[in-house]
Image 1 (cartoon, rainbow, N blue to C red):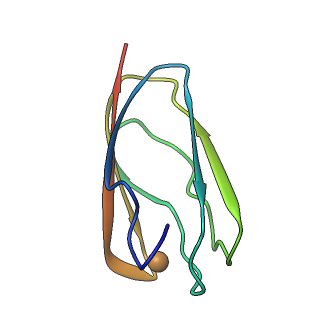
Image 2: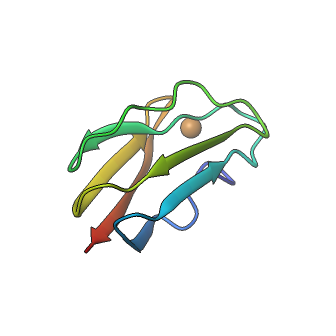
Length: 79
Ligand SMILES: [Cu+2]
């Protein structure tokens, strides 16, 4: 997360890979599940905090930062 955005806002990755987010912003953010293969949301991430998600199922994950609802992003997970 940087400049009040998920960067990049869309990624493609294979099942079995792990995605890691780092909050490079001063304001807190979170990674909150919206739709697609289910995962447990991150909770609040202060500056410098990290969150990892192992991609275990194919599908398109949509997620948002609920603190800044305009921060939306996707992960397309393929086999
Ligand atoms: Cu945010």
